[in-house]
Image (cartoon, rainbow, N blue to C red; front, side, top):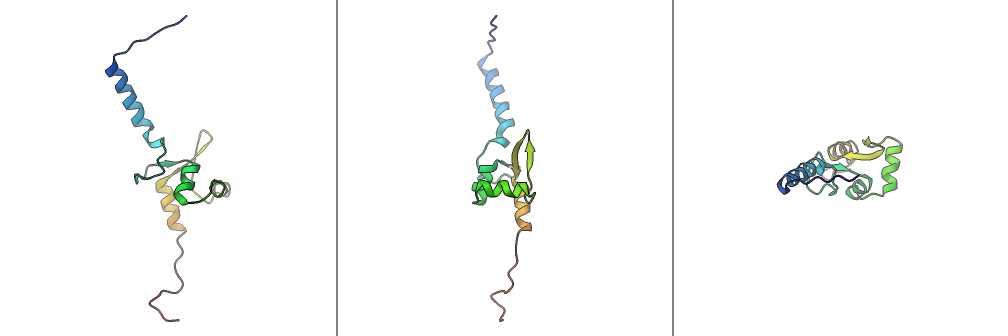
Length: 100
């Protein structure tokens, strides 16, 4: 038994457009657009932080980095990563304008 459904082209275009809009946050562009709601996958976050995939997995294992687990897949919100990076900031002990 085979059933075929024929839809007008403009209707299918609307469906494709809505589907694309919903999937847009999950499509990887390595955060180049500066969107805070952007989700990284492990390779994308590794590229963004200039680190290895292994280093990212280690941070997740020791719960040192904020992450989401969506159906078993690791994802990282850009805004959470930016906030986490601020907590890693180390102040200089000696500033250049002070004499030792």
